[in-house]
Image 1 (cartoon, rainbow, N blue to C red):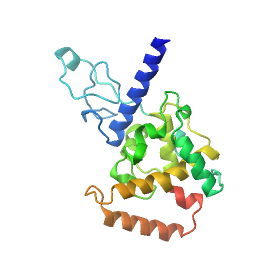
Image 2: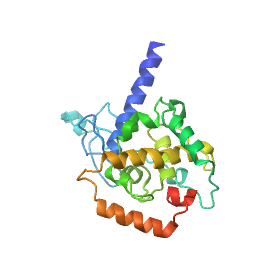
Image 3: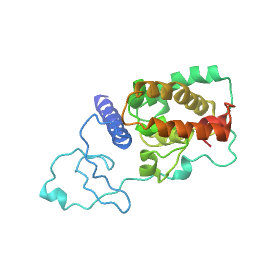
Image 4: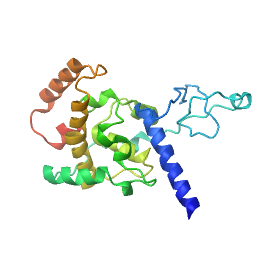
Length: 226
């Protein structure tokens, strides 16, 4: 029993560290020497493929072959053309999304969205931009250079939360997406209002361009970025 608890806790911690490395938060001092196809880096023995603590390598470890980050199939996280998305009452979706954001049963390792993003923490400055946009984690793990919000949620489910993506037409996906867009992102923007890390002129131009493209109608297409 205790062994199972230790194993599950270790997996959950590893997943948290992996996501923090990917999105730029830093509970520990991580090295940037990660490796993907065509990029070499050293992976400390005993640490995951994605994460390496910044500690000296022994001579034996330096001789070990470089291992690559395990990519995921981008087709599993990119919304297929013609997908019929769930459309429901906005208030109901936000209420359900708040619960799902903190629900560890969505994952296979005990993580929830709030594990890494409680109080709108753990995001890169690009989170301030309207979707779709470039997200470092998406490019690193799936080779995707521009991603929509619901697609990013599917990536988080697939990678740090180690589970299958939700159905594109599911109410759960619609609820989480609505909650992140209307509540979490708003909280992040308020928190980062005076941050020098965000180019607010660029954000305003991006918002204006998106509003011109989609209009003021708040439908699923304009809200989620594709």
